[in-house]
Image (cartoon, rainbow, N blue to C red; front, side, top):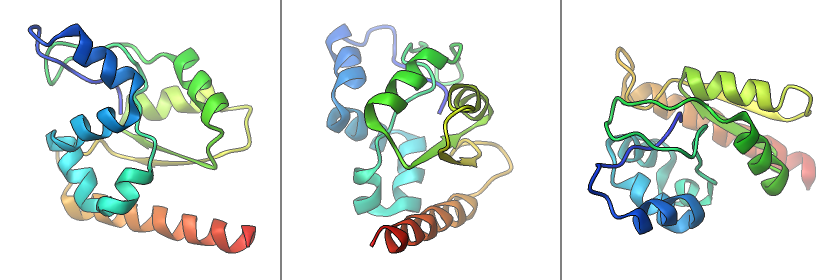
Length: 143
């Protein structure tokens, strides 16, 4: 997704933990509307296996606020985590990830933002099933 948002009164320690502690990041995400929809689509096990990150580590102060995607941040995460698959949610994330990994042979699967207008939970559920099928095919090839 594009970027997180935190109320202006949020303790900076919380924001830093969100950036640096993946388990904390997942727990915060799971309490948001987007996170609830992702958790419902992917299920508890897969949701907790996914490395969740944002196209920009910078935050806004409103739910509809946005910050510019950070291609260098994306490249750094990809180089560090070496994923076999990247999931994007929303146009900003899709475009930024596309720029960041254009020269890397890596599978990217794109979906709308979990809270996008005119999309339903069913749409996310279908996407999550496609992700599961890719993972299964990849695991079958590796084994």
